[in-house]
Image (cartoon, helix red, strand yellow):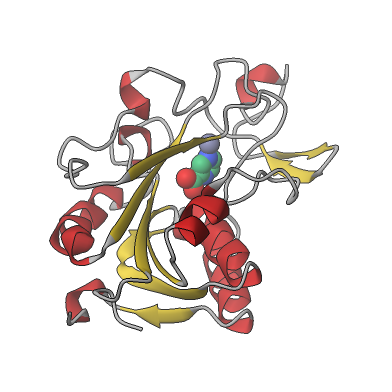
Length: 210
Ligand code: VGL
Ligand code: ZN
């Protein structure tokens, strides 16, 4: 399938100020995804943007675990959880989209990570891997069978979304030049490996021909 086909969707993950240089959980070069995303968004018939959207008391924040350092890990009932700096607090400046992102053409803005006790990297499921966000139903009702992924961060929210999309039966393509990673202890290579194993294709936004 190609981006212009009726069953194609672009899903742009978390292109928010806090994940861009100067933000609370800045991804190196994170703002470099804005231009390629703007260039390709209108080429897809279905366009979804996601926003990481946490309450201030969110348990993925190190600040809510006395004595814990950011980027350390803890056990949650659903598995291991990285403890992050406070980021993307609902309604805060940092949770806003990067000001250069053209959000106007988006069909759906999906917010995730709003349940205080569970993180949600994926646009499809919370980190317990069972609580759905509703995105799969939205895409299916719109006849989507193939998704292209861009945004931040390659090794967390983008990878989790790609792996879930593949498991849900969507054809999945990662747009590698429209993503940037955090790379915590080799997480970028690990995520690339898992995506490859799960049949996620890799392409470049700059090469998309519609
Ligand atoms: C993300 C860490 C915490 C992401 C969100 O968008 O990749 N990473 N929350
Ligand atoms: Zn988050």
